[in-house]
Length: 436
Image (cartoon, rainbow, N blue to C red; front, side, top):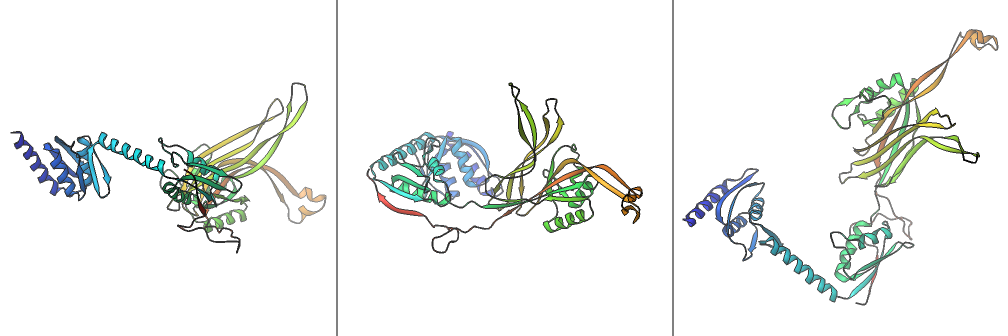
């Protein structure tokens, strides 16, 4: 009776398997022979398997998977089995047996390594720092390290050279690994513009610039984000560089704004860059003895940037914007510093512009109105003109545009320059035998 049920379950699987061509394949088994199921499923998945003698018993399972190999793995998991690739064949066995095989194979390999002679190589690095790579070579990850049990690595910082000792096979692997790491860092040019716009005009120009919300979709004016006026806001610019330059030129010519600075800085990937502008405010510090010392505190607008480049060429900027401005005078004579901070990460395309706004400041503006000609008469002209002072609120906008720099060239003794090393090029010295 048991055999009848087993064959009935296996027939159920055979009927279901060929019809499962959709995105999700399905298998339904009840008390089927595990060895027979695994062999037939492997044949259908077009993979070769070798089963351990410990693969026995029945399997009951109902599962879905994206492909036939996934269904096979589901059956193996249901029986506490695993597969390990050995050449072109998958060895199927209980998980503890595969773990034991791996442990024995590793022990055998280490024993073989212990009998091989050690060799030493000088590896001259062009870009990476030898002091950093020697730490990676000697570090341990999950109980293992890149160097063998008898291997060692030393760094000569003066010549940026690694001295690596290990057996020949592992040395060859280490050379390939070091060649991959010893590459020139990609460069990023970060262009920025610091623009001061009259408060009553910033909303209008914000609409023209069409700022895109970073965490949403659609175009919105930056000044309509609904954030507190003292908060720093940011967004992606919806226009290209030339259009931005034309808009800024029109803003300046109309007297509604001023381009305060155009700082640019170049930095390597994953290396910090800093742009800052401000002033140092003096204050008196009195000691217990009564002596006073003049010290300075920074009140500045600063932007710290760390760029990272994706495989697709996009640039991720880690930004830290600080706006420190002089505050109220304290009773002890020192001046408080009002601070605003923004820390964020933004992903941009090469040449795309990020804009930061919401930084406000008060500026005294002097205006003169006069009767033509009469207002210019010496002495008497004062009777025909009027000078007024008003406080104009300005909003500062910071435009940040990262641009990828093409591959750099490297110096040579003959010509002074050469192209960056291509795939497969090495900067290694000749090998010398070492003692075991």
